Amino acid sequence: MSILKIAKIGHPILLKKADKISKFSNDLLKKNIYDMSETMIDYGGIGLAAPQVHQSKRIIIFRNPDIETKEKIHITAILNPSFQPLSNEKEDDWEGCLSIPGMQGLVRRYSKIKYEGFDIDGNQIQKKAEGLHARVIQHEIDHLDGVLYTERLADKKAFGFEKEIIEYWKNENQSAK
Image (cartoon, rainbow, N blue to C red):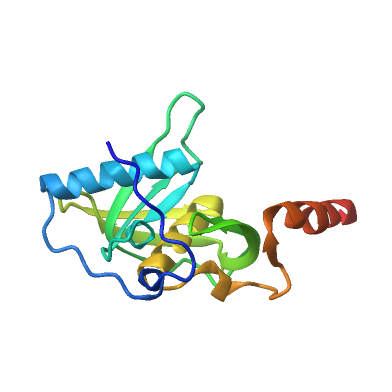
């Protein structure tokens, strides 16, 4: 087990398109995904893309909040992932990122998607997702294309330090409801 170093905003690896995986089911790939999982859990993340750990590979991992319990964390790894929106409906919600620590931004994403890719053995995966699950997948796939959530802000002013966002944006929006 290894906890990997997270690339932070400003590092060039976060701005380039990652390379496709061509060889599946090998020990190095399995170790990499295991280390990414340990890193994501250690940093308290819900998703992680290989470029965030300084690897230009089209790999994402994520926790599925829809099936997770306090006792069991379920992590999915997808290689060479892609997604398509199932409708034009979008939602704005707050996002953070392990590569932009302590910050949050209001990001517009598709509400429902279909995603596909391959598992570690090269078997094709095709599933649908909505809500937070869909948001996490879109966020992580963006990393594979060199896109940070700061490029997708719904409101350019709705970005800042997490503490300030919680105090001045989220609480203000809760009061208005």
